[in-house]
Image (cartoon, rainbow, N blue to C red; front, side, top):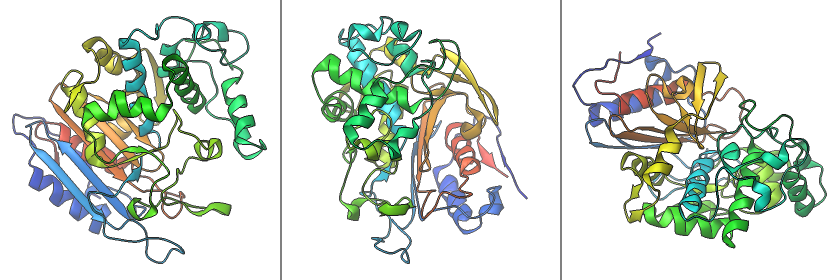
Length: 375
């Protein structure tokens, strides 16, 4: 079986070659080392190569036509994917924008803003702890399917006990990012959707991104879930759905083009298409590891929201990025001036055996690395 390999040279990646390889991979995944068929029905890519050229690719339909109640149409540039945890990157940028405005001291205890979390060490919890997943909070909560009301669930999230001291270890925490969203709302006096729109999406110049629910006819379908049936246009994440409110953890819907805009803002040192989003100091926090974690591919750095040099989905790209459970990815390589957003609905119609890491690695290297090539 062929595998994705990287060759670095002065030759810039060729957009036509990249899209041809993607088309081949959709027809025959094994041809380029992607095991099994690509799960789901849709794939969208937007990128800027290390040579500065633009790459765009759309494949498939918004849903499988034989799924009950599905709205299936050829994938177009207007269709929105459930970003899942790519939402955390946008929330991280929103948080640092609030820091730039002087409304939050990232080193100060969060209890100066609101009484969040509980247990030993919670009085020392800071914004930087939440951003870098070293808060000491658990990964998630079992209460999303047992609490009787969204209000009870929200209270459990906001008062969640720490499982270790802040700063002691890396543990990816959806709870932490829900608390982060609440902290931003409290510090600014605005709702999270308004914060996101004014501080991030508008200066980025995005056109098709925002919190759901959205019109199912404009949405790429995700999973068929128990009592919910087919999820198309409402958030896939169970905790976010149970809360019934804009969340720091998940909930944004958008396009590959709009996700790419976030990556290019980093490449441009904090400037978006329609205005400055972040200060250079805050941009630096997005790519500077605060702590390190490990996964199946080895060690990676964890900065404010973004992972740094995570080979599991970035391959050999020496940059920063993140993935989302629904099959989404953003990778940024400031050194080469490149970025790529790859969106799939890998959990459609079900999440079993849906592995897109090989595809993500291949795409990251093809777009971001000079001379990146698949043999």
